[in-house]
Amino acid sequence: MAKWYLPLKRLADILAAGALLIVLAPLFVLVAIVLKLSDRGAVFFSQRRSGLRGREFTIYKFRTMRADRKHAPFEYVPAGHSDITAVGRILRRVKLDETPQLWNILKGDMSLIGPRPTVPEQVVRYNDFERGRLEVRPGLTGLAQVNGGILLPWPERIKWDVY
Image 1: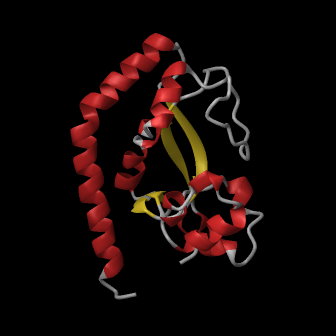
Image 2: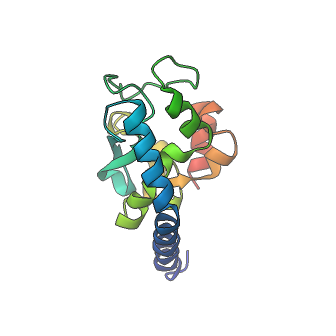
């Protein structure tokens, strides 16, 4: 990889995430108001994730589940789960729940494109090949997401993520 590639990619991430945060700010305010009116819990969901070289960071999303719901690290919550709020279903369907991660991109925790960040509890179980996911900054979207995402079996997702 050329030595100019990573700095240029980081610059593109900053410019794109910054512009999107500005453009989407009114929508973020609207989503926050709707979330507060529909359910008295927090507007944002945060969770520890592992990023570049295994460094932990806090990821942010709009909360889509009931406020009293405890989220287990390895748990996949399907679209029709009863703990997902009505507003949460809409946010998930159109992927707006993920947009606060633009802040993670601006901070340098994530990139626009890369493997999705995973929970530290999963990273400690990685084999040598899977640890290759940690050699790049995690992303908002990546090859595994556009080729099936969570519906792909784990070994196939890893093949798309380790490049």
